Amino acid sequence: MKKCLLDLHREDFDALAEKLGQPKYRAGQIYSAVFSGLQIDEITNISKQLREKLKEEYVANPVTIYKKFESKDGTLKYALKLQDDEIIECVVLSYKYGRTICLSTQVGCRMGCAFCASGLNGLIRNLSSGEILGEILAVNRDISGGATEREITNIVLMGSGEPLDNYENVTDFLRKVTSPDTLGISQRNISLSTCGLVPKIKQLADDGFSITLTISLHAPNDETRKQIMKVANAYDLKSLIDATKYYFKKTGRRVVFEYAMISGVNDSFEHAKQLAKLVSGYPTHINLIPLNSVKEKNLIATNKKQIYAFKDKLEEYGASASIRRSLGADIEGACGQLRNKLLKNS
Ligand code: SAH
Image 1 (cartoon, rainbow, N blue to C red):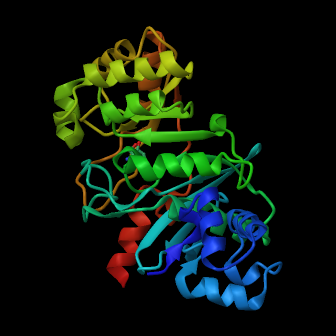
Image 2: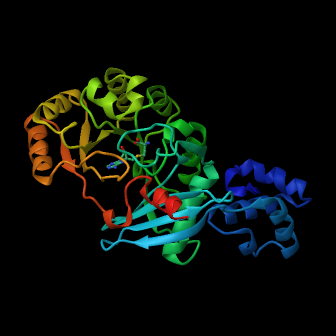
Image 3: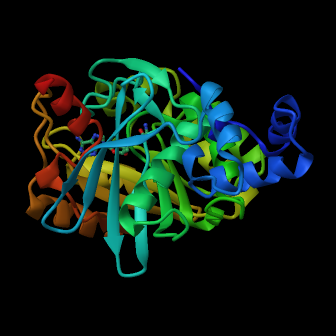
């Protein structure tokens, strides 16, 4: 595998220019070109000879589009290929205010949540910061037709993988993508979704990030949560909620809780009462998600009527809640579904 220029930092390009016997200003030229989304062959303000030399050891963006699917509702789903032929997926949702990209942070996942397709084959490997950034740059180009237009306005780290299980690379990616040298996306427009790795939630706040923290909660008590999420054995709900309060105190950002509704598991009025109480006392919001059924799992989605009734109950108990529109279900839109389908058919 070649080294990836998007994995480097600005200062590394100075060392690279020196190594290649080039003047210092070349470093800035190559850095700007690569981080704006160009491939090495497209950096036309350096000589062809230098491009060839760079290509011997490096690739700029290692992510290429393998397959693209368009849903009837306009949602785009991409299967992306990495240098080692691993496939990851990402989704682009279009809204009135712009486009949100849902990025993967790992190939596979080792969290093993009962309802999720991403972890069916365990963790294959972490993505590097350059690979995560490469997802956006590749898709942005596909949508806009050029490297310099900026079609993506919002980012959610909610694709395959557990972002906080790949902390160093994910935070490196966050620093890069918020830099004006690349997409310059504001932290306000970025969400990170985690199944709840408590020490890493605190570290994220301590490291000065203020992105929106989204917790995949899915259960309002430890007993139910342990049935569907292995991570609940490592961190109980009290320590998880305390970590989100800590995050709120440090960042001032409202915490969002994701709650996939599973028939007969977490969708009773008693669950609604417990849930509303659990997230009360500081600014929070609950997103109710109709479960996307995954064939391999024997879990059934709660029906629409009960989801609405559950939402009403939450509001009655004083919680802020909404029901997530389910986009892209006809193109295997849920986590890990597309990758699994492609693996099976290959
Ligand atoms: N590992 C991170 C991010 C990836 S999952 C996390 O756990 O948050 C992104 C969101 O999709 C999570 O809230 C996850 O619980 C949810 N999800 C996974 N499979 C799902 C399914 N079959 N139906 C509905 N939501 C699902």
